[in-house]
Amino acid sequence: MPLLNRALRRTQETLAIYWMLARIVVPITILTEILSRMGVIEAMAPAFGPVMRVFGLPPELGLAWLSGLLVGIWGAIPLIYVLVPVADLSVGDITVFSALLLFAHGLPIEQKIIQKAGPALIVTTVLRLLGGVLYAFLLHRLLMATGWLASPVNPAWIPMNVEPGWGDFLLGLLETMATMLVIFLALSWMLDILKATGLLDLMMRGLAPLLRLAGIRGEAGEFTAVGLLLGISYGGGLLIREARSGAISPRQIFLACVFMGFAHGVIEDTLVVVALGADATGVLVGRLVFAVAATAAISVLIGLMSERTFARWAFRSGPRPILDI
Image (cartoon, rainbow, N blue to C red):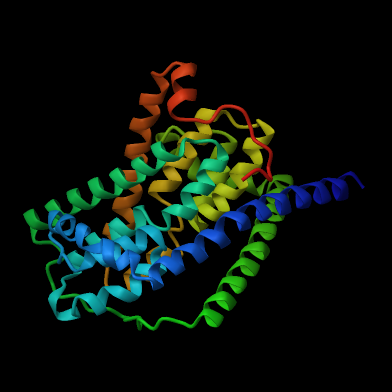
């Protein structure tokens, strides 16, 4: 009976967090889609063209990057080969652009979720953008110096850029939210089962050295691992629940969110960009190494901060009600 009561309580907590996430995801997704269909994103794109040259990329990809930043990976992917012909791109070009996209995408939604766990919105958003820009630039310079990945890109898949009608869009959004609910509940129950059976401890022992290098320890590592594998919506959503309980320290929550910002959804996202022609070493291995090193450096930096400075600049002190938006 105590086990059943615990499961029911966990389910109620998870549903409350899901409801909060839905109130973030649905309106922001619809608003972004409206702006996209009105041409607002396309009108802003020319300002991003010169930035692409810093990474040795065609300026036309500025529109795809901006769409990715605001809409998400699936807002950028259909545009890539529409904006620039396959014959004009190398494996290195797609790898560098994919790195930019994987570090920072869907910021209005993902950063709002991270903010709900406690970390400051502006600080974590700037860190994600700077991390992506720095990694993409370093990768570009490495490729220029060595000639690595200079061969023409040969994508296994070229997505079609077909804009769905509003009916199809809303149906797709509904299906996404339903899938998210099922996965979210399953993850919540699965984590409790894995904890009870001791399997979670075994899994975390495998990831612990990597996360420890980044300064992430204890229970924060469990939710960081979920975010790393499945994405911020799931890892961040579960972390919100624990943050409300006070079981994880604010500094560990901050580091977990920073790490997830640099490296998250590595299964699906990596497979997608590799199918487009990106090199797996550049978009996965290099990204993980950078995420660990950058988060470790940030861990040292916030370790030098007083509690007052940390609370003022990096973390929202005092929990807010779960349903407060």
